[in-house]
Image 1 (cartoon, rainbow, N blue to C red):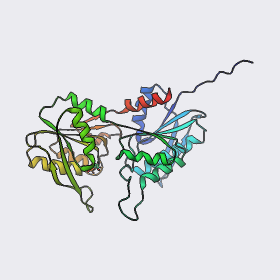
Image 2: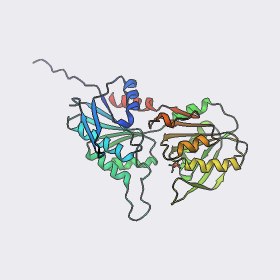
Image 3: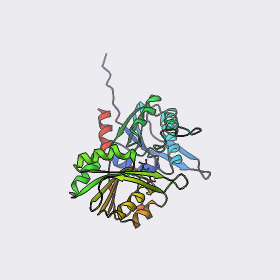
Image 4: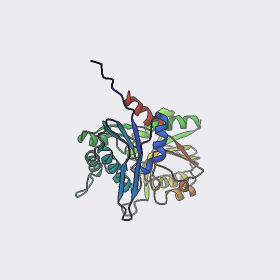
Amino acid sequence: MAKKTAIIKPPIILAGRESKTFARKLAGELGVQLGKVEIATFSDLETHVIVKEDLKDRDVYIVQATASPANENIMELLLLAAAAHTHRPKRITAVVPFFGYRRQEKVTTEGEVLSFQLIAKLMKSAGINRILTIDLHKHRSTKYFKEFNIVSKELRAFPILVEYLKKKKLDNFVVLAPDKGGIPESEKYARALGVPIVKFYKHRSIRKRDEVRIDRYEGEVKGKNIIIIDDEINTAGTLMGVVDVLKKEKARNIYFACTHGVLSGAAVQRLAKSPIRQVIITDTIYLAPEKRLKKMKVLSVVPLFAQQIAKWSK
Ligand code: R5P
């Protein structure tokens, strides 16, 4: 009897509307096809999804950053996964360059919900088997994926940002951690760049969540070039709080680097008016043209995602 030849189908990428640019770049890097999907929003704001590809036995990657509007983008990702699931694929991986609800990974008061865990559960229900993401707020958050038997890989933008910062060849500079939670990560940057670290301790107002007060700091900033490192910039409240102190303390040039440019509310206007020399972010979230400033530098983390997918596809 003639031996059967198995045809291995290549992976396929489906893009959510938030991450079309990211998905296109990713497909280009991997030399794979972008699958056909039809996504629409009804006038009552319901989302409607049709996956127009035969995905049977295929390794499917759905790319969608669940950035603002987080709830709509999450729902779109869930619907895309559930629609893909109807084609009986081999596996569905959600590629989530920005994971909405990443900061709600703990319960701090009675009556609060562990939102991150709920999102993981919803993803499992929608048929997602694997998650590829980058720089969650707390690295231990991946345990919530495990809880629902979702395999996950959390990448780090660290090598991309460090490589860029090294090329700047700045002298007399320090790395600054804007809050207690950011100290371990900033220490990694300071070690990689071979410079001292300055530690700031912040306090966020409960009533005005986009305002941050710096309680105290440790380290030397006077006359120094400063690189502030954070995981995201959202309202820029944290950054403005830090910059105010740095101005008073007569620091020299101020740079800021982070993975996720959330840039909600008045963030862009605040950055435009601030004395910050350069804002370095990555492309985990699509940066609309009206949000772009000359002082912004966007580095791509697509190669990191492509490398991981290539590794998984071997
Ligand atoms: C907080 O724990 C985070 O690491 C960031 O510092 C924070 O999310 C930045 O938000 P915002 O720009 O609104 O201050």
